[in-house]
Amino acid sequence: MRKLIAGINMTLDGFCDHTAIIPDDELHQHYADLLRSADVILYGRITYQLMEYWPTVVKNPTGNPETDDFARVMDKIPKVVFSHTLKKVHWASTRLAKGTLEEEVAALKQSADGRMGDILVGSRSLIIALLNLNLIDEFQLTIHPVVAGSGLPLFNNIDHRAAFKLINTKTFGSGAITLYYEPLKK
Figure 1 (cartoon, rainbow, N blue to C red):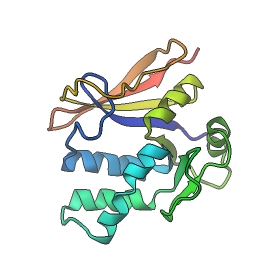
Figure 2 (tube, rainbow, N blue to C red):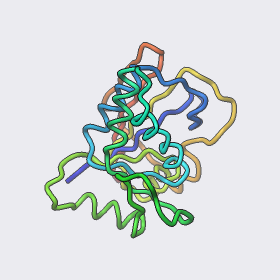
Figure 3 (cartoon, rainbow, N blue to C red):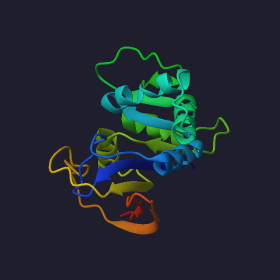
Figure 4 (cartoon, rainbow, N blue to C red):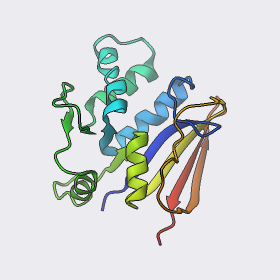
């Protein structure tokens, strides 16, 4: 069965704020590699609309190999968007979710179409919902050496205690660190 991996960037004080961090070449390469290991990524509307930036980089490359590579990989990976307000999406590799989050994840995990790559989730709201449903198989939390002071905390509105086992770490030259955790199943 395919793993559902929640991956997200956070500040040192626990906020999810993409404007508080500065992604460098090493971070872009890290996330491009993560996307290559997956067959699909799940987004909420807000994160999806932020990610719609990347097709513009595919059309007009920056000249930076890591950034341009990330853009190409992001453009290709199938995306499923969960939204109550979006009626259609324009990114070719994207579809709106038809079922509930739980139904879509169950269908993707049981997919019999020969896919073996992981399922990624990169939206704060979906990570919270999936944690509350006990559906996350692995967390990849990239903590950046920045204190934002305010913003949206990742672990907000969690409806139960959750414990994790650290399975790996990765340190970046920027001082960021990715912590790999598996939830301890009850």
